[in-house]
Length: 309
Image (cartoon, rainbow, N blue to C red; front, side):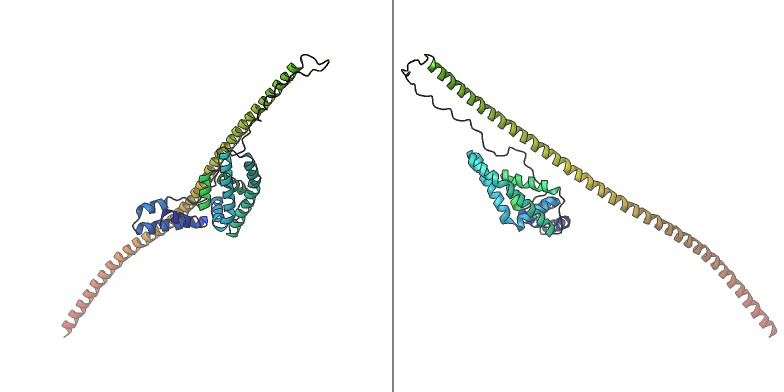
């Protein structure tokens, strides 16, 4: 067994079985002589319920997930090629495909006896979206070994807005010999052409600026989402720590109560032992005294019988 096989086996289990199975597997591997692998296995973290549900979907509905990952591959290729038409087409397919997979993840979790809370949809969607955009995230989702939901904090591929090509300069035309045509007609046409080009340049510049601002906004929103996710993770960790503290406190209180009762019983037993020892000593003295008196009585009886004879 190698590390990947161990991880695949463990992350296919329901969360409540993970820790016990992980520790047992690490112990088994260590006993077999591979301490380094055992240490790596022992370091594996228990998955959250959402991460486990996505892992399960990767195993049970690989074909369905594969369509999303293939769409992500095509999206990244179109982005590198700056193929605006392909990006637009893929973008139209992306949203409904992710929505279907979110439902599939929910169905798989419910089928395994772990229905998800409504708030889990956002984490599932962010994880699938990260798998579409980021190649490393796609591989982690495909392998089904997530410990926590994913989120993507980089720029999302989108079509590049290209400035409209400047029209070719019109060929010079000789002034038409029209009776009554103003002499400044050619100058007016050139001025309008310059104004049109300037307007197109300004529009292209405006579009580029809008694109940059949209990208900056998307980056800020993703960073905020990631920060919120980190806060939520630590909030969950704190809540778990509180529950663990409460469990340990209750156990200590129970043990303290049992210890107090045991001390009371021990005190009673010590008192009983002391009384028994004291009474045993008194009984032994009484027995010795009685034996002495019996011996004296026997001696007196023997003397009396001897005198009579």
